[in-house]
Image (cartoon, rainbow, N blue to C red; front, side, top):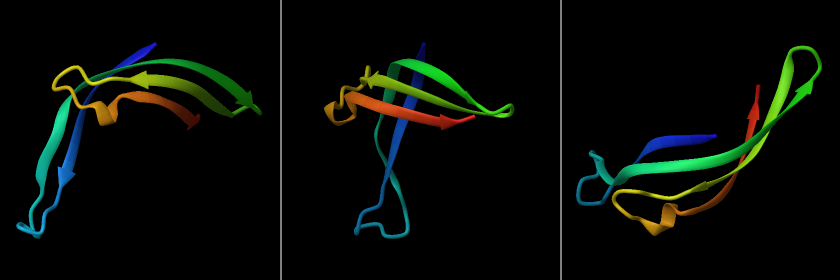
Length: 72
């Protein structure tokens, strides 16, 4: 399974305290491995691990491995 997302970071500087600037935006795929555990009749938990990397523009601080936990 994989996600394709558009990342966006908003920055507020002391030069413009009332406004925000968009920085470090771009496209990032995120391949992942997930498993779902059923808890009871109506609830479940999804656990997974993913690796994300920016395609364009390249920004190495977003590159790396992460863990996902979702309550279903």
